[in-house]
Length: 305
Image 1 (tube, rainbow, N blue to C red):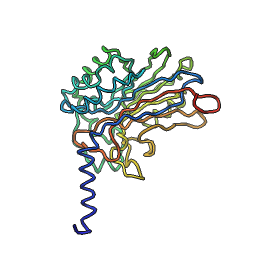
Image 2: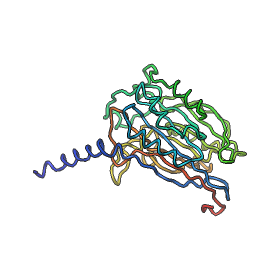
Image 3: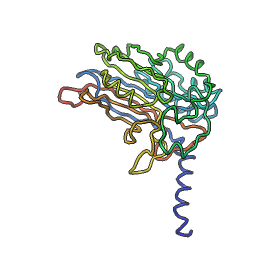
Image 4: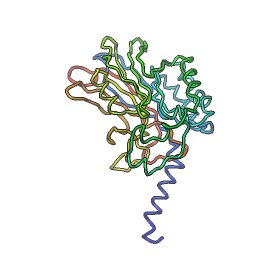
């Protein structure tokens, strides 16, 4: 092969790898979060996000079904479950026995609107929010009400622009949630985190800074989000190209902290998610993932208990 063609061959090989292998290389990540009171027994939280399910994705469905064997104490679903008009039965079948466990959820834009082709150039330019998303101009056409009813009938708690609480493994957990900030559906309030609970958790689909800032100021020690796909296309030693919101690229996936001024830092976990749009079925250096968060206690010195 001529040397001038090597870069093009390498790029083609990378694209083929991302589209044929990595997009289906489902991975379970485990992260320890020292967020409970000192001496607390651990809590195991399964974080699911951005499944983007279509009925023909049998490999993904089977892999998700197997997560019930983890027996987490709590499931947190941060939205974008659907990518097809007929996907609700596939989603419910995939989540399977996880729906019988304590769970909370919010929705993302792709629970409301069916996927459409979008300009990759516009996406990579990093425009964010409702003004940069053509989805916002459409009528909601996905069966989100059917999905919401199915989740709540099985016992999961809907956190769409509301507060709630659950008893999980003998602990009282307080929650606040918002509808998708990417479409400016979020309704933020000034209600402080319930410090009498064993833990207060904020749940959002898209990790926009206005949401993270408000919840940090209100004293939420843990915030969970999705939406970014971890960047979906990542460059080694550089990371995500974009986050599709105003969160910085360094926190496009995984565990980090968020702090406003002198407020106590909040732990932030952003899931890289389990799927992609059907019109962009590729991942590079960013495998589809679910995350098992081991919430542990922390002592006064800052070490894990």
